[in-house]
Image 1 (spheres, helix red, strand yellow):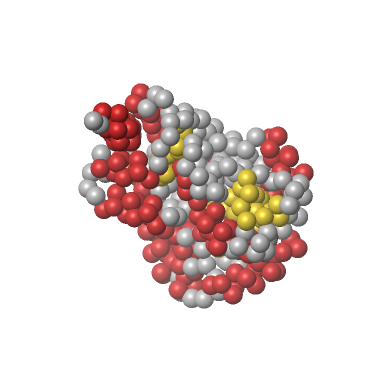
Image 2: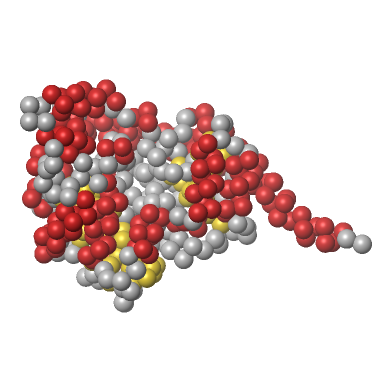
Length: 374
């Protein structure tokens, strides 16, 4: 992320009264504090204190079996021994990137995509390209629900991608948060030999545990495990143990159903407010996930608009950070509804509309002054 973007986000976070529509945070209202606290106490009372000890790099067996069982229910024939527990989805993406392409290779991405993945691929020396044309070595996809548009990849696009027979890094972070509850078959089930499947509990449960997973292609499993061990030895024993104990006593499907209802209602509220206060901005309605991605045909600088918006008491994610080439046009904004109160979702677009009006006046002011100069 650009330093200026980070600075503006930090200013917004530290300023009382600013409504933050940036960041893509899950709702803290959904965090299962009590059940996780009780799982923590049980972990501390375990005679062997395994939650506080070193463990194997692939992760706890019962947690890997839970993940594999969920994937099998979606049509992917995966065993527990094929799952590697990681320190969040970001480490899983990093492991896949280190093995799926080499420095200087072309890496395909969508026209707008997850900024932390784009930054990671650049750091790894990948040359980012939109699409999966000839020459692309690997493609990063969020087929179930994308980021920032919060919509699924079409069946035609899925078929075309898999027909290319290239490495695919499948980020499944939002799959269980499709509003219709129809969790799709993962790409992993269709191309086991070349899909690197990435998952996480950060969006569905809470990010503080830092537990994710990677299912690499079978031929790459040992190399991925060696790399995981060399990177950090293992994911947190404490986080894994607490999570495993929590999952053993939780109705996770019921929890996901509540989360989908919650986020769907939040999305609908933001959509109504945006249409009321920013009628000339276009967007596709989200089918899951945490955000809307707005675009305008009017020229502008998304960072300058973010500065103006922050003064008006609202912040957002500028569109340029989602684009592989960092372009500003068309002017784009990501607005996250996931961790904002219902009343704030009504107020935030109103503030953003005032900021947009002020920004346009200021942008046109030099021209108008020139026209009236003696």
